[in-house]
Image (tube, rainbow, N blue to C red; front, side):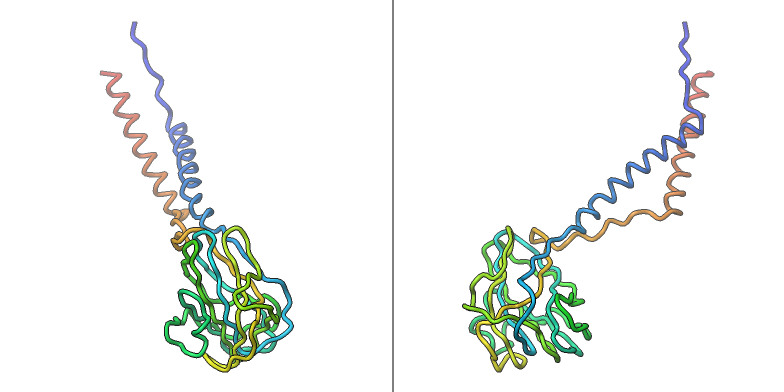
Length: 229
C-alpha cells in the first residue's frame, strides 16, 4: 500500500511564512524594547538657592551607566555645559584639569527638573565615585546643604551626594555645601545602552516573504515530482 503524503498548498505555505516572520519580528524587537528601559533618580525639589553652576558627586552601588541629567533653571540660560571627572570634585573645583566636557546644549526653559538635551554615556563601576559639574550662563537652582559628600538621594544602584555652588567656570566657589536639584537617568551595567536592532521595513518584509514563498513553492514542486516518479 502506497501512502501519499498531502503537501501544503501555496496558500498554506504563505500563512506559515507570515507566522514565522511575525515570530522573528518579535524576537528582533525584544532587545530594542529592553534597551529602552531606564531608571531615574531625583533629588528633593525645589531649590532654595542658585548660581551659574553646581558640582556634585555620585557613587555607584552597582554598575551603572548615566545617560542624561535634568536640572532646575531659575533664570534663562543661553547655553548649558556638563563636565565630568572620575572620582570626587572635592579639591578640583578651581581647575579644569582632569575634567572632561561631556556636552553643551542651548537654552533651557525656566523651570524645575528640565532635561538637559545632552546624551551621556558615563559608566560608573560599583563602589566608584564620579563628579559632575553643570555650568550655565543663567542660573542653576540648588538647595542649601549640610555636609559636602553626604548622601542626599539614593536608590538600589546609585547615590547622589551634596556638593558645592560655583559662581564662575572652575572658580569663585559661592556656597558650600550645596545640593544639586534635578535628576539623573541611568541604565544598569557598564556597557552603554544597546543600539536598537534594525527591524526590516514593510518593503523588506515583502521581499523576505516573497523569497520564502518562492522557496516553498520550489520545494513543493520538487516533492510532487518525486512522488509522481
